Each structure stands twice: as structure tokens, then as C-alpha cells.
Length: 394
Image (tube, rainbow, N blue to C red):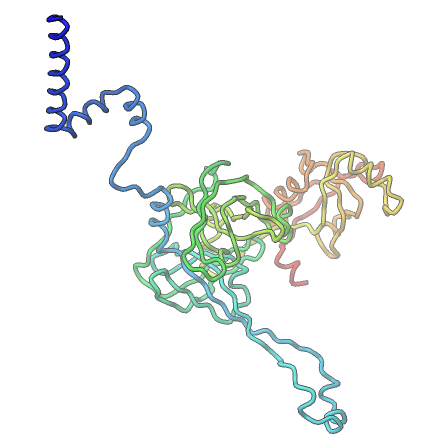
């Protein structure tokens, strides 16, 4: 019994001593114990806490946010509505002058978009459709300052424009490299959607090289970056950032029927022509003047079974010519509706996108050797690419 009592006394004394030490040095003791616990060390190695808990999104936006601007435009639209009945003096005398109000001959259309400063002296990148046809352009900085904007250059096929404001030592956005972007990368959209200034949305890069035809704007010459970062009207012209706050794209398009899908022009496209646009130069875009579709044997068979099809389609892989524009390079070379293009300069083409890229990468006036199947015939035709801007003036 004495021995048992001795063990109990020793245990009570140890517990009492421990409690006294914990009361005297609680923080240090518990901290040392936790740090030396293997489980806690494993968690600590994965989670690093510091005094600044802000995210990478905050850092990215802080890097470029002050360079993002709001662009307000106004243009005068002439109605040109014919009004012979209302203007007839007989009816006005009979019914009275106030019965038929005169229709306005013009009205003012206001628009809004975004942009970002790329030069400390006030050069701004935005979308062409934001400022195209505008009579007045007003640029408002994040700090509230407003400037009159001068549209220096517009390129409709690439939907890019450069606007200049008079300023000095302005904040600028850092232009990254869109070629290094990968699917799954972070995407941060900054702009002024729906009139809500300085709005930031976050998503990822959904896919790359989405053609303008797939997006639903076939008149453009673009391969878009697709993102699920929310892009709404008013975002157009604003920057799409990566996780480091570098501009990788220019937000430019949404699809009305889509949800959670937006598109941006790769910044490398803009970097290639921004200086020329700032100088007011026209950007050359080769074209041949056809409407086309990607053809597969399955699509051809389906078309040929339709009794309303105006011509028989070769059941092969290639690019089907749906329409040839009058007086175009394709028309001059002898291309016809129903032809199937299978090669350009000895390289096989199986999609409309491949053909578009081949033409876009050519020079104005450069001869392109087309291998074409027309019914059972195989033809070799030479098409010299023309200037798209000249075609639009015809």
C-alpha cells in the first residue's frame, strides 16, 4: 500500500508541476509542442500564413487596374425616313399641323466600352467596334480624370483600335505574351461592364485559337482566346490578364445565347499592329473572295441525298466553295460555286480555318496555287490574293 501510495503521489506531483509550467509559459510550450508535431508540420509545409492575406488576383489587378479606362462615345445617326404623307400640304391643311408630328431627322447614339493605356503619354488600346464611327470620344481614368480621345487608327477585320489622349506620366498596362497562354491558366477580366466601372471577374482559359467563324462573326480575321471569366457589354476593349497581371488579351465578344463564355483577341495580334494604327496607317488583309465550308465525306453524302441541292458535291475532305464574290481574286481565277479546294501550294487543306490562315499569311498579289476538284475533274488554278479593304469599298 505504501508503494502504491508513493506512485499516486508521484503522478499527482508531475501533473501539478506541468500545470504550473503551462500557466507560466503557455504560448511558448504549446507552440513548441505543435511545431514538433509531425501532423502539424505537414500542414504547415502546405499552408503559409503571412500578414498579407490578399490573393494573386488582388496583386494582378493592382498592377494594371489604374491603366484601365472607360470610353464613352457619341455618334449622330441620320434617320432619312421618307415622310411624303406627313409633309403633303393638303393633308396638313385638312387635318391640321399638329396632327402629324414631324419625325426627327437625326438622333444621338451613345455607347460605352473599355480600354487600357499602353504608353505613358496616353496611347490606348481598345476594340474597333467601341469607337468606330464615333463623333466624340471621352476617356475617363480610374482616378476620375477625363480626357477627349482622338481615334488614331481603326482596323475592322481585327477589331482593334488605338485612341490617344493628352497626358503625361500616365499609368500603363504591361503587355504579356499570348503565345505562352495554356488552357487552364487563370484569366482575369477588367473593365466597365453595363456601366459598372472598375469591375473584375475571374475564370480560366477555356480554349485557344477559337476561330471568328465559330464565334459567329465571320467578317473578322481572328482566332480568339476563350475564357469563362464573365464578359458583358461594356467590357469590350478592356484587358484580359494572367495571374501575374500581364495583359494576354483584349476582351471583345460574347455570344448572346451562351452563358459563361467570353472571347478575347490575343495580345500578340495587337502588338503586331498597334504602332501602325497609332500612326494612322491602314492594315493590309489579303483575301480571295469566297464563302466556304469545311467538307467531309459524310456531309457531302448528306447534301447529295437532298433533292434540293443545286449541285453534286464530291464526297471528299476539303473546303467547299459556297459562294464566289463578283470581281474578286477567286472569280478572276475561275473558282466556281461547288468547287472543293483540297490543296494550296502543295499542302493539303481539310478545313476552312486552314484555308483562311493560308490566305491571311500570304502577301497582297502573291500567287497561290489551288488544287480543286470540280465534279470528277481535278483542276490547278492560280489565285492572286487581293486587299480586303479595297473589296469593301466596291
